[in-house]
Length: 554
Image (cartoon, rainbow, N blue to C red; front, side, top):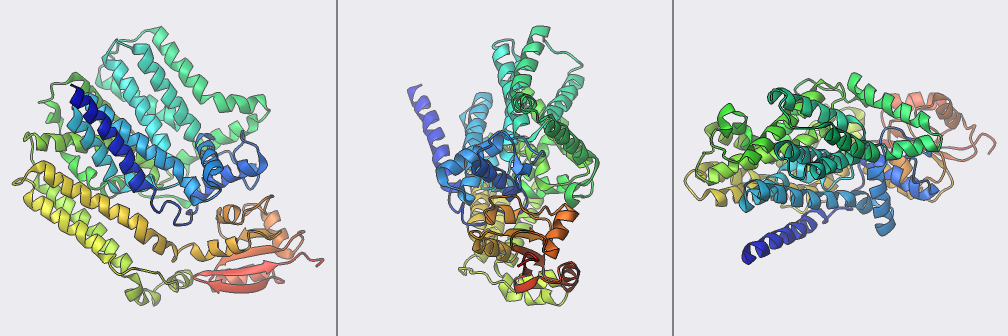
C-alpha cells in the first residue's frame, strides 16, 4: 500500500517536472501573435499602466468582449516576470500542468493508475492541446473550468454521497468559466444537461435544495465581476458584452467564417493521434463490457459534451479554430479508453485507424518538411502570389539544417507503430506513437514557429519596438492590436474603427507624429496617399511599408 502511495505522488511529481520541461522552453522566444494573444496581453498591460484592475480595456477604452479572470492571471504574471511574451503565456503553462494532474487523478479514480497515465499522455501528446499550453489565449483555462464543472456534476448524478460538495465544486467551476470567457459556459452546461436528461429519460435524483445550492454558487461566482460593474455604474459594459456574445452566434465575426464541417476537420487533423485512436469508441457497443458504473457515467457525459460542443460551434457562424478546443477533453478520454482496451487485449487497432494515422502523420510530416525547406523553393510561389505575400517571402529564416527530420521521424514512427502494434507489446508501441507526436510538436514550437513568424508579422513588430519610446501615435491601416502592445502606448491611439479619428491622423490634425503601417501593395499605397498626401514614406520590409505623418502646424 505504501509503495502505491509513493508511486502515485512520484507520478504527479513527474507530471509537474515534465510540464515545466515541455512548456517553458521557448515560451518567450517568439512575438505574440495577432490578434488573440496580443489582444489579451494588451488588456493586462493596460491594467498595469493605469492601475484599473476592474475594467478590461484596449487602447484605454472599455473592451467588453471578455471578462477579466484570465487578464488578471496575466497581470499577476507580468508583475512577476515583466511585460513580455513569457509573462503573457505563463498562465497557460500553469494550466497545462494543472490539466495533466487533473486528468491523471480523475483517470486513476475511474479505472486505475495506468488509465490515469494514459489519459494524461493522450492529451499531452496530441498536437493542438500541447500547442495551446504554450500560447497566450484564454481557452485552456476556460475549457478546464467547463470540463471540471461537467465532471463534478457527473459525479453528483451517480452518487448521493457528498452531493453538496460535488454540486458546489461544479457551480464554482462553471462560475470561473463565465468569469474567464463569458456565459457560453452556462449554455454548454445547459445543453449537455438537457441531452443527459433525455438520454436518462428524465430520471435524476435531485431535490430543490440541491438545485438552489448549485444555482447559488454559480451565480455568486459568475456574477462577481458583473456585480462590481453595476456597483460602479458600468452597466452599459454588461449590455455591450451580452450583445457581442449574441452577435458571435448570428454573424461571422471579424471575417472568421467557414463551412459547416470546419470543426470536424480541425479536430480530426489537429488532435492527432487521439482523434484517430478515439474513433472506435463511437460504436454503440463500446460499453458492453464495462463493469464500472462510474466509468460508464463519465463516458456518457464526455460523449454528450463532445457532440454538444462540436454541433454548437458548427452551427455558430463565427468559425475560429479554438472554438472547438473543449472537445480535446472528450477526445483524449475516448482515445485513452480505447488504448486501455487494446493494452488489455480486449480490442485491436483497426485497419481504418492505421490508414488514418498514416495519412494524417504524412500530412503533418510533409507540412513540416515543406516549411523547414521553404527558403529553397519559395521562389516558385512568387510568380503567382499577391504583392503582400511576395513581400513576406523576401524575409529569410535561420534554419539549423536538421529540421526536415522532424516530419520524417513522425511519419516513420507512425508507420512503424501501425506495422507492429498488433504483434509487439502494445504499451511500448503506444509509447512510440505518442512520443513521436510529442517530439514533433515540441520541436515545431521551439524551432519552426520562430522562423515562420519572420515571414508574417516580424517586420511590423520590430518597427513598433524601435519606436516604442517615442512620444507618438501608431495607426496600422489594417486591423491589428500589435501597435498597442509593442508600441508600449501610454495613452489613447487613433481608433482604427473610427473614421473621423483615422482621417484626423492622416490629414495631420493631431498633436503628435503618427506612424502608419500598411500592407505593401500598390492599391493600399495609392488609397493611403490619397488621404494622407503629406505623409512621408520611411521604408518597406517583408510585405509592410511604413510612413510617418506630422501635425499640420509643424
